[in-house]
Image (cartoon, rainbow, N blue to C red; front, side):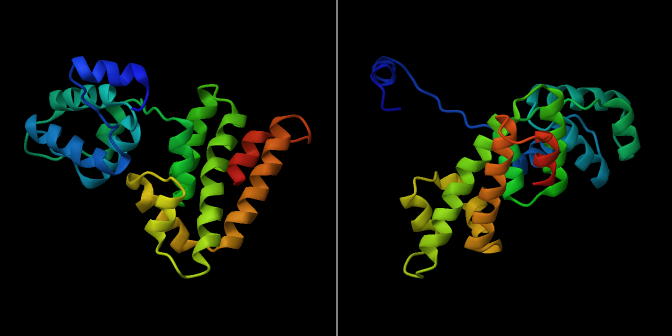
Length: 209
């Protein structure tokens, strides 16, 4: 936003900033589209649909249209029916994985890990993405030990975007400084494996993490 070219475009045009849809917003987004097409899903079916289209809104919109063909508008579709008609089209980035790990969402983190491995993602980049967040958490946890600042002000001072305060703040509340230091040490071990300094399977290390 501070670059010369951006300011030049902004001066003569219209800038529209579009933020990615967060995972926590996806169920409500899907529910609105399903209601518009008069499709009802059981809670378990909606949860399965979310997992199969997460990170891929085009596939999500297409899934809603496909389910509309099988819905009678009255009887809620089951998870088995969603599994039968909707393929797994989820798409994730290394940052999605890092966020799932930090949030303590074990099942989701492992599912994202499997997707990224299948897509040929480099484990060294995944360790980098997670380590970047862990360093911030370790710094914040250290500063919070003094008790002189609130979590939000500490995160702001460390340059964390306000929309991420909830995720990192909850992690800081859940685990102490020693935990983040130990996790950073584990990431360092995984990084050595990635770079050939130590023998091992980097994907198994990431799964164990």
